[in-house]
Image (cartoon, rainbow, N blue to C red; front, side, top):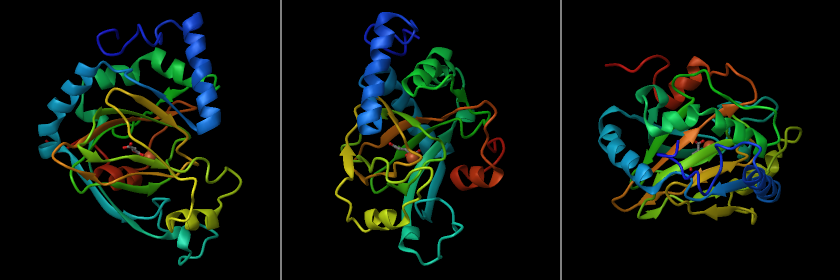
Length: 266
Ligand SMILES: O=C(O)CCC(=O)C(=O)O
Ligand SMILES: [Fe+2]
């Protein structure tokens, strides 16, 4: 792993060492306070740059253009919510996505499958363990946002979302979020509607740097990515981990996010 991530700065390979515990504690404090933590420069700069450079032509040829109008739930109907409720306001998303099954033996696959990575993440979230998905498409994705593209407001499927920026855009592409807008027991539809109208002053914005690991509570923290401008695409890896093994998207979810439910057409 030393060829991919900065193990001198972040001792992910030495679980239960003093340095590892201190890092876990720091992440827990950040998570409790902000609903997120960042490990700046976890991935070596040249590995991130190489991943971005190698993926650029693939985005042009092999990626799925995820382009649709959707609401914050990525679901057309929500039980118990009137179809015209303002929490169901619709927005446009556009980005390009490469799925995990389009990669092999590359740094991002190696990192996603590295046991010490999920072990570290589980510790930061105070969980006994975290598991990779059993879904060859959804487990991790590499997403690109070209000029004019943006990912709009949504809640995530998984409790936590783990991202790592490979390439920053010239302009735009901020990560915009509102920590803990809802809870497991309270969907806070009126609060959602207020935020979507731009009336929530707790919305925050973060500009990521390449190689930074960002972990946030995406299930109850709505978030979006601002529109990118300039010549350089925003390229980011998104890793999904769950509390139990064997989690898969439904065929309908795979088709919605990736345009296919099975292997890529060759
Ligand atoms: O691109 C990002 O920073 C966030 C991606 C995201 O929210 C998602 O894939 O669910
Ligand atoms: Fe998300």
